Image 1 (tube, helix red, strand yellow):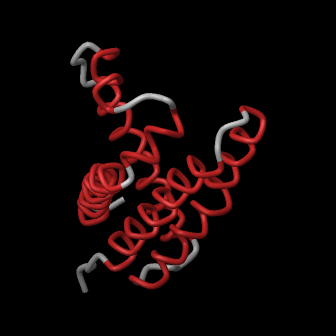
Image 2 (cartoon, rainbow, N blue to C red):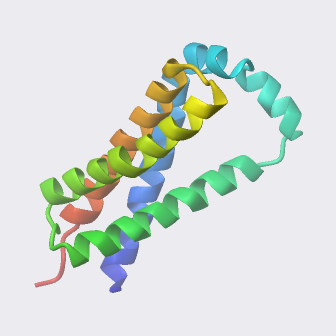
Image 3 (cartoon, rainbow, N blue to C red):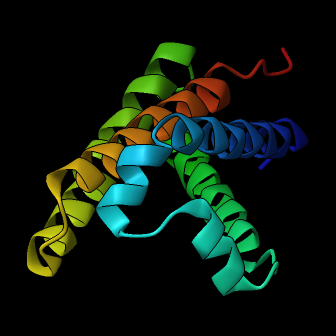
Length: 137
């Protein structure tokens, strides 16, 4: 993987991560209601440790590198191709996996909608960034 592709993965991961802060800020009330806790309670439980954020960012970075690999292999290295591939993968694997687990865990559909939509939009945007990243001629 060339340096440009590494930069694209890191930029995409940062955008995806920041989008998560905005997304969950917008949906804080229904998300909190669906999990039965609010951000303050979760912060107290974590004792101020950044562990969840570190795990979250590393997970997103892994997804971005895997997506970059697929974009390259499937010759989808355009903004539109990356967007479609990222959103499609998130829909078919992430959202479907969440639905499977949430169904057995009896979690509310509202929680699935919030979390699945975040993954689909976030990975779609990450794919667009990676796929549309300018390559040297």
